[in-house]
Image (cartoon, rainbow, N blue to C red; front, top):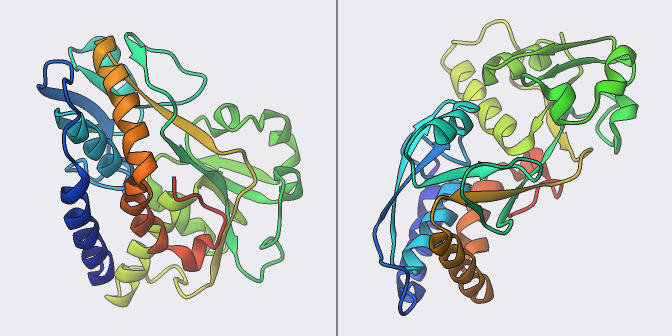
Length: 268
């Protein structure tokens, strides 16, 4: 983590402590066990990140304490359905799970990460990637609604490993990575750090990279088995929204990658 991000997070932690006064009469305050995906910088292996920090702040405002169990992406949905967790982070707009859904409280932004100056740096639609070599996450064709484009791409490869999504772009074996822009930027920066140590000899991490927002934002919700906790979350979220606290928590994670994301990725 950069010194800049650490300092910014410290500032907001101090500011947060000043405004996080638990809402009066929350539903019996307790420790809430939630399952979440390990997808930095949204959630790291300790549950901290752009999304994790927002959830923690809101539940703290309600007088609750959250404990995250971190699992690989995709398994969090299965584990919540089959397990005894109190809550799930997070659910897409078209998903439903046991329990009660909160209102959308943050967004993910899928898009295309491309080489800046390679001719794709100003694209606005997925159709402009016809004839191009694509790397994407598993089941992206369905999740992104691009099944109609599959036959029009030169090829499309699905990779679950985030590094294996980015490496082909930097080796010029792919023209675009279709995935969440913030996650892709995070793993790109890790590869750049590895390259400085001579650990990535087969890719050119010095290539300029740019993210393009070519899909709609994905609203994210939480599920809780107890409706009273769901109602608590929505109420306390609205309280902190009015105070501007939540943008302050999420913004440093996005700003760290603005050289790649530009204005194409939302703070929340």
